[in-house]
Amino acid sequence: MVGIKIDGKEIAQSVKDRIRKAVDELKKQGIIPCLATILVGDNQASATYVKNKHIACEEVGILTKDFKLASDITQSELNKIILELNNDKTIHGILVQLPLPNQLDEFATTSRISPLKDVDGLTPHNVGLLAMKKAALIACTPLGVMEMFDYHDIELQGKTVVLINRSSLVGKPLYHLLLARDATVITCHSKTKNIKEMCQLADIIITAVGDRSKFTLTPDMIKKDAVVIDVAISKYNEKLVGDADYEQIIQKAAYATPVPGGVGPMTVAMLLKNTITAASLNSQNER
Ligand code: GUN
Image (cartoon, rainbow, N blue to C red):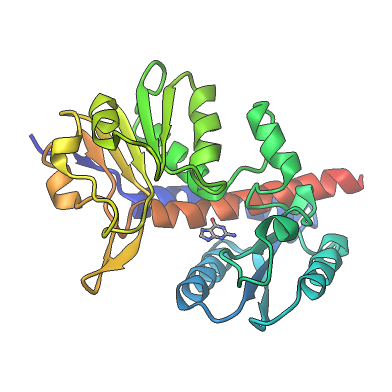
């Protein structure tokens, strides 16, 4: 039997419907949620992602401020802009689109964002809170993946989950979120020796490599009725693809996400959720 498609567009729409109502409530209290985005340089993919984030904000009534900065901006110039946004009471969330050009340091940049405005959950404060199961602001893609499990009532307790990614935006936050739900989590990465055997153990595979020339998740690597969440998106043979070929994987999996139309829309929906969470946090902080 063919498995069930986890439709990111459909789930993201249901999240947006909830968020629109929450935005209306905030507005009744005199709070107009506003997200500032910072895009440095002219990376085309990043520009498209930021544009999609703005469109989604507009759909639910969240204001945006768009900072497009020259690719040769210095670290201290960027720091100054972040500081100004930290101090601006009309801004509730700050997102610096990654990756950054080489002269800029990701940690030096993201760790300068006020933890109350950190809609990517990347500051040391929020990363620490996540490990302690106390975080309010958590990286958007991992939150989106968890929402997908819950939408389909996919049980996590006691399940073996293989993560193929160890980044700050995907693998590490997912590790904590899944562990907090009593899953057994195995984190694989580029130096893991036996990825195929690891995947064959998994009830759930979450893959985010994003380079088909290095890695493809094929049906022979998964258990029958596994759940496959494909976070990757890259161009391969002129097509947008994930780490797995959805049409093949879904023949064996119980559930799988397509690419595009899977995790991508969820990342954007969770950014909206984090922005209204940040708006509430900031207003509580001012009282
Ligand atoms: N680049 C790719 N994904 C993300 C994300 O979730 N947040 C930011 N800031 N940059 C990204």
